[in-house]
Image (cartoon, rainbow, N blue to C red; front, side, top):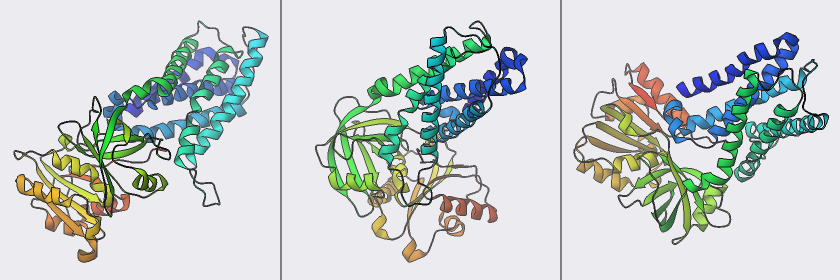
Length: 418
């Protein structure tokens, strides 16, 4: 994706600018300071990516891809900082005052140790050799301190002695990204809350397979396209931290609907505690999983609760829909179905839309041959829009290829945010 390329190039500019600024002091010194400069730019850009910038989603392929790259970039920054830490630079550097130099050295150490701890915490979700998995809310709260440690490292960059003056191109470049990183951190802590919209819960349905939450906007609704997701935040003890969920429906009046499977601690608490009249905050919509970007032939394949984006997408179809769309919802048994009545009804209203509820208990596991046999059109050149377990996606794509069916594109989201 173009977004990744741009970020990598911005980091490499720091590496290139370090050549005239540092290379005269020997190879090891250049390696150490080039690594620290490049790592600093990577950290600043990571702070910016943490603001959830919607305008960058097309460049990365969606917020889900931004978050995955954010994690990779953080690990890369850690590796570069480790190089700087273990490869000691050797030069007679310039410093403002000995007092600031000592403070910068201390700040750098605290920033380094803090970042190492937090990035490792982000990288390893489960404590090795144990069954203990770090709870999401603890991970999220600790993750906020990365910005604090970035500020300490920025202070270190500016006031530690270094072999180049403030007029060097590298110095100016690092200053720009220090500002980017600090402002991005400030935005996430203070201004980002303005993106949230207030809603009131109007209905809670506790279906066997999901908890359906419907809510109406108190003032302005969020702007969301069918298939996108939002961050849901309840103003209630035990449900306060925001979690991402796919939006299962958007009404003309701005009302929204979520269908949430009770899998983890948070979603189980939500099923027990959520009630009509609750005030919630919603931020979104995010993501690029929207069928309007697709071709004239589309297969929608959902596994279990993966039906949620397709509910919103199907609901948005008009009787004049020109695309040929075939939706298959795979469930273990019929009790896992969510809003199948709506989907069957929509298939009667829209001539080019068909729906199949695949009951694996009765019909066996879905495979490529069954998908081909049940589709009302030839799958050659069709798009596959998928939401469900990755092994199912991989098996279907492989099976279709073996069956001689060449897909136009395969679209899916990587719903993993830490």
